[in-house]
Length: 310
Image 1: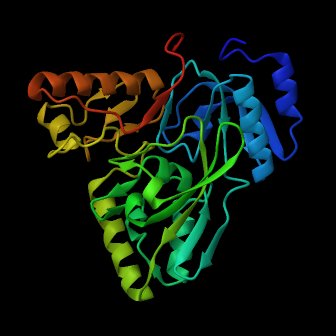
Image 2: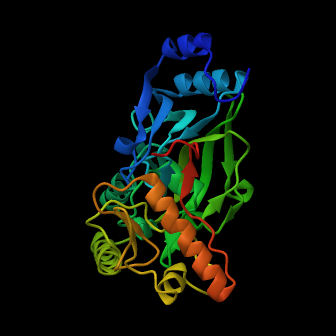
């Protein structure tokens, strides 16, 4: 079967999976923080673990591509869309519980809800996620963090659904974290994580969260749609500094703009298209490479077809 072309029999099978909701030809602009993007072939919402296992197994058996949507906060879908299945774990995988000093959270849980739970439980270690949008699974996959900490510091284990639908638990010794990345088995889906935290004063935690939120608000744009940091920081430097140094801070293409507040953010000023954002990405990479000999590596994920982007 040709990858990307959904056979009617596969569509029928996905439509009738137990414990899974299916929507067809869903435009991603309404499901990403940048508010841009064309349609996916199908949006699947597994309601439980068994439903997800079956869906992953069926998709891999049919060689049909899929990706995990998360909260769409680190994702740029091109205007022509993508012949693939987007899987949202928000409905079936948003649980959170405490077991002594550990917190176990589902991959679809919002980071803001996870932090609120930790605050209620007086468990410290995840304050660095204050103000970071997105879900637990997405944060794990990209080793989300700030100078105040990152997921690799506190993640004790990850729970996965593998390509064949089997379950796996990888403890921290088997989790190959690196800067803004976690390498996992091909086609594996993160379904949950365990965090090892420490008991702390709730007031001390609140003060730290307030401080981190204020710093983010002061330095980063938050009133307009964005996908957070567009590029990874190169070793020993900052992507935002390099982009500003080549004179691109505030530059616009269409309604996409390199933020005047932080040059490593691209914001949607209203009617931006994915092609406008990609044009700014390529411009920043080109200018920084010419001026400093540094290749800016993407932190956001770009998916979709390159043609028919009008």
